[in-house]
Image (cartoon, rainbow, N blue to C red; front, side, top):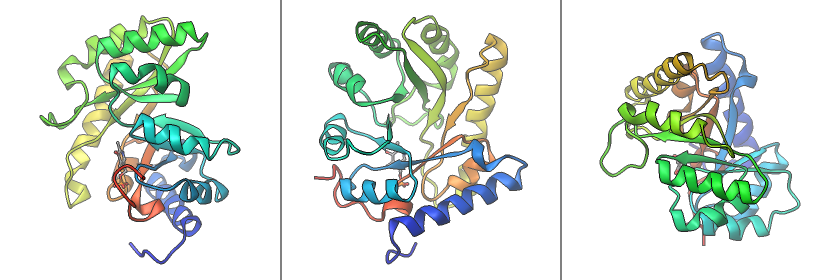
Amino acid sequence: MSTGEDVATRLARIRERVAEAALRVGRRPEEVRILGAAKGQSPEKIREAAAAGLTLVGENYVQEAERKKRELTDLPLSWHLIGPLQKNKARKALGLFDLIETVDRPEIARRLSNLAREAGRVLPVLIQVNIGREKNKAGVLPEDLEDLIRFVVELPNLHLKGLMALPPYREDPEEVRPYFRKLRELRDIIKEKLGLSDLTELSMGMSHDFEVAVEEGATIVRIGTALFGPRTSRKGV
Ligand SMILES: *Cc1c(COP(=O)(O)O)cnc(C)c1O
């Protein structure tokens, strides 16, 4: 990755690569949205990306999102939470995010639905799947996914729109392909079995493997460093 380029140039390149990957497998490029994964990036970088046409931003931490959003209230951005959510941060998260991608257990789902009801909202969510069964990673295990989906779709103030995953890191993106494929297959099977026509989103793929993710059906790719450049700090302070 060349670090001399600006955010607008990088976004244009990523768009091209997403489109090429989509076309390779007979998908329409418009089916894939680019989310700027902005942890550790300054509000100015997000502003540059928005000026270049980015509309979707992801943050991992509630407090970091709160601080950065304050400086960007004039921008027409949609914000997704892409990091793990603690129960005691749920109320704050609901106030900050348009969609939460990391629902992974019944307690947090119930809490979010209750808070959304209080706020008179229906909150769109994704369920995070621990697709690589990694001990240190968040997400519901594949074998528990169907039960969690059955639970979430019964909650009146959540709208389940799909699945998200953060597969194991592999230098060679081809080695991540089986995990992306597995997530799509899980989605397809459960969508069909439970008749959930709204289960359309697959949030998967990051800077080094997003083309493979698009080939395997991603509808949201979460791009950090390839879009914004190196992170300035873990929490963007
Ligand atoms: C940081 C992060 C990304 C983006 O990672 P890059 O390798 O910088 O593209 C995507 N998704 C999640 C959940 C992240 O935490």
